[in-house]
Length: 138
Image (spheres, rainbow, N blue to C red):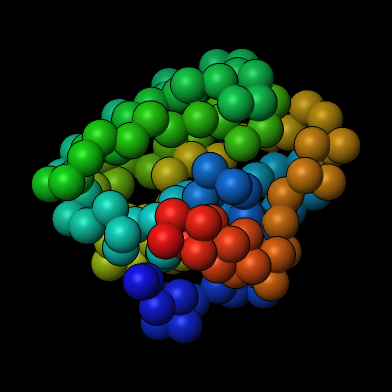
């Protein structure tokens, strides 16, 4: 069983059930992969991020992340425009594992519909969600 207590879940950000973290600044969101997801995926070797200046819909496929264990499809947590991608992560995907909440952010997005924020989880809700998912998996 995974020990969730070894992971950090900052309380100043929101989370999604797709294991993204989201730091909001008005309608601008900085998005990354949670520390839990980054570490459980193990060593991230490659990442394909969305292009800048494109409009995406919530849950639209926007990229892929590959590790020594698996490949994971990345989905947009919100509808809106991708305004910036983290070039450092493209060049060094290991930053996601080493610093998922700081240097390992993936992209920045302007959110079209603030109602979509309501589906995001607090750190306590995300922790509880993970706990339930892991207990379900046995």
